[in-house]
Length: 543
Image 1 (cartoon, rainbow, N blue to C red):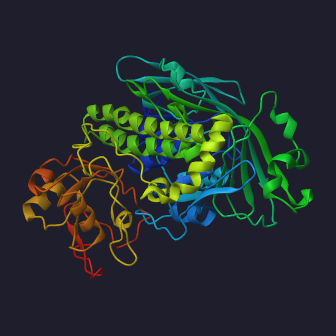
Image 2 (image 1 turned 90 degrees about the horizontal axis):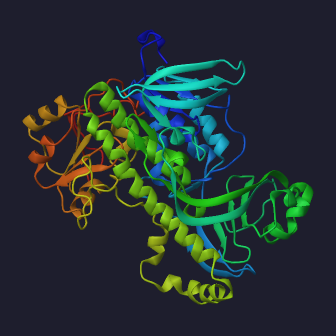
Image 3 (image 1 turned 30 degrees about the vertical axis):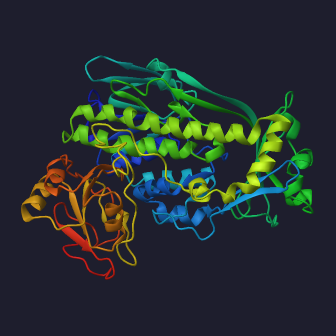
């Protein structure tokens, strides 16, 4: 943090409680907009145990915005799809995404080691001169004075000294047992899913010779999931039986009855046990995500069963949704009312994915013998259902709900509330490579000089696309000729009236280039159009 901007009594614009991936992502995004932030965390470094293991291609774009997309590619592993097996490991159905290319230019399902990802994120955070990360502190209380100022109390875990800092905004990214959530009086609503599972992480240089996708064992007595998460790392999850504890499974030998079907022929001394832990998979949603200037993000706001791999994804989406809105309010570009859209947009989205995970969990793990018979009869025939494979493997998440920053969501075929695809513009460039992190007008028709001047004054970039290009086709499919895209890739508004769309662009001026890592020489300037061709992808102007 640039302390020269502040005195002891000046509030820090944003204090973030929790330096896990959600908190560090929020801090990085805010830092890219030049916002002073203080991040407080109980630990001095990255928590060493793996937890989350999956990211989709939508969330991959957020890592790209942070500046670590390429580094993540080097440490992650695309997964092949989903395989359903019965209790005897007979294959019921396979949904294979081999060769699939997502609309965003990234693999649609990616496995990774969370400590490795977090280390990338923390190293990257060091480049943000307006962000200060302080570890070894316990946040004990959050209090608001009713005048737009928040006091954050914490204790230094090394010295025992008690301290307080004033803040304008506080982000609670402090996990399932959130101190921030308790401080604002928010409670978790139970969405009726509660199961005890054993989570096992094993490393081995011996190839297990398994199908390179997620294996879901559909067994109400001992449901299980297996996945490869790295070149030498493997993850199993088993539903626990009554009376079992993690203490019963503290060696490879003790785990053999569980993992044996996947490690046949591999000597125990070639399998290194990284972790065995008991988790209770829950479906919960905070009843409110905000109290005035205090917000909840990540597990502090929502908990999901892991069956669709959206836990960490949801938290990173929270950070992406809120960060630019806070930056705009703090700079004076955007009215404070835009912060009301955070919970309006994110809560229904999180709820939909939690309910999907809950539904899949119930379908795969419950029903007793009758459920087994039903799954055995239906699962092998699922591939006959037209379009089902695409729906099961499609990584696109639901559109955001209508809000002051999403106009027209819910209309048939509307693009509003959905993500603008990270579509190819040339052989080497995509949408994310040439946009700066502000608002963008994507148009299939040329804008007038007056419209470009208007958008330039508001900090909005212009991307003109030619007929036949991917984005032109995307607009046409949405029965539109232009779209106003937000800094978080979400479509605010689409239409055929370009003049009205331009008039509706908010003011959002960039104080600092949030995409300094983007391709040099290919950034759009506000108001100046860059034109990318359809068949002639090398054509562009004013770029």
